[in-house]
Length: 372
Image 1 (cartoon, rainbow, N blue to C red):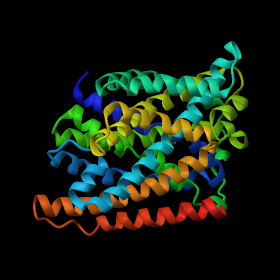
Image 2 (tube, rainbow, N blue to C red; image 1 turned 90 degrees about the vertical axis):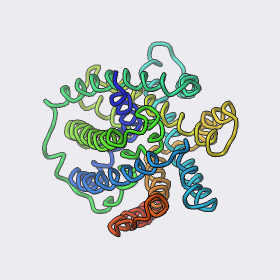
Image 3 (cartoon, helix red, strand yellow; image 1 turned 45 degrees about the vertical axis):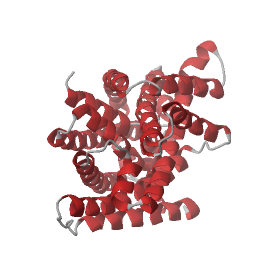
Image 4 (spheres, rainbow, N blue to C red; image 1 turned 120 degrees about the horizontal axis):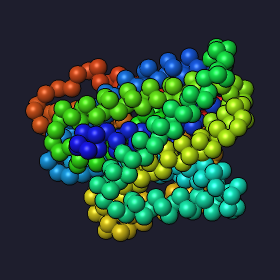
């Protein structure tokens, strides 16, 4: 397997995560074409933001993670903000993976061997933590193998839905939930935390890094839209927050089992790479020992689960819009300083439009969370 395919596997495996299961519910509540419009706008924004962050990573000699780049170019104050935003985002994502991935594992295995949700969340946590303790090379191979199974299961899942799809299910629009898709889609398309790992695989190859970013985000968006069409089209009013449960009821038979396998693999894949990214933030940028960094990255999401943070859509919506928005706003400022320091060039003013998108997006998500 070439470096490009390893890097693409890690990047796509990180992006396509637990957010995919919230998207059909969001489309059901707000409307499919509302969701599609958000995807077109946020998809472009995500590609541009990842590309400029990729340029910073390639153009910086030191081996860092996002807060470290911010500290180098913007200073300690902005680095602290970046560190908090990234940690909130990654811990929120890991919590969502534990919650939903453990749930899928429970639905898959508990009918045969028994046990409650907590047992399967712990199994998910232990397996993931052991692999996070290993190097990126082992994870890139795991990501590649998981993606093969993932796309095979997805194809089966979609083919089974075709006879049950009703076009009427795509037509409804509810303006009460017009802002609901923003945070969930931001969460679902963001993979910036793993770009340093992608660079480790590719080396200083800027062209390949840009190809991985554009291909990875575009491919992920297409997969999401196809998945939403399959689930929403077939499930209609039976669409559930986790997508799979409602789909299984609508289709019948054993299709839900394939969905639970699909869900577990998707969540586990992203849990690995984001967990590794968290570990290296504490290890490289905060200068904590490797083992303690691994412990923080692994155990904090589990602690959040134990204290009762278990609302799936709220977790990914707030994480995507607020944490992702703050991080991405900082990326624009970071790129401006990077260009000035490295080449004396000024940043194109169009990039400031990205800042406006992120600020408005945070306001939208907070408004929806409080009054939605």
